[in-house]
Image (cartoon, rainbow, N blue to C red; front, top):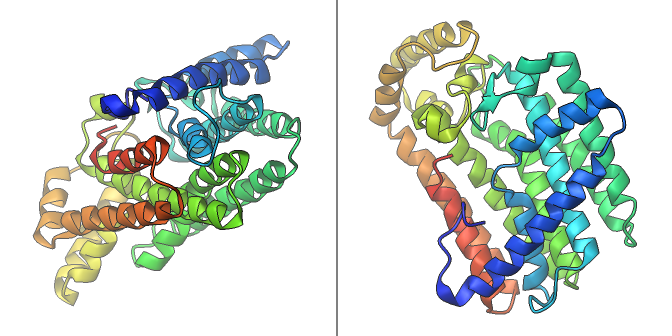
Length: 342
């Protein structure tokens, strides 16, 4: 959490409670992934380096605190398990994404697919999903299992829709956002919904928290798309330039093409086709030229403004909560989506 936020002094109580909880979440994950098969155990050890900032478990914990769980007591065991479940699902998506993107670097480390091969990476992702469902089934409340199953389907639907639109240079914004709703927003919404449910939030609160999570999830992905164009690979910690090279048009490019006159659009389409045809890792050729073109149509600013609007909508959803330190931390987490550089 310290990696994500600069916490004001009045909110350090929530911060310390969350940090303590995240240590226990890590322990839950390690127990859940404890395999007696050496090859599996080694892969699980390797994938642990991809946990990063643990934003999703943090959202589960803080959402629980915002709805009534006391930060004067240790986080309840079931809340910790929920946080571990969503993180394992997230880890699985990272492993599978790297296979689809043929990525070599993740969090400044070699990806599972690059190190152990696609077959091992796919099976490891499946193992992570299975472990998350097994842990979820141990909870006294059956609703998380139903929701995680639904979210897992949405994740696959989003990825399949994205695959269907690979190399589709005519993709529009509604389709782009439909993809993001499935591949990113659904899981983040589940984090905040499940946390609020564990904290005793009623259906109205759970729905609002789901909206909050989904909005910051989409904004997170828009920012990720900007970083794929503008980020520093050493800072971001993963291969950049992958979206275009894999034939995936993101919001800046979609807006750019929609802003052009027919003759200019034809030239830009040719440029993008040539860039996407050069498969592999690393930034596409003529990246500077591409960025200047995006600036000329205001597409980078448009994308930033879209992310800001989503964060505004997310924070509006929090009005269902009472004013308090946990809600303030959720607002800070939302703002941090816009300023992150990794």
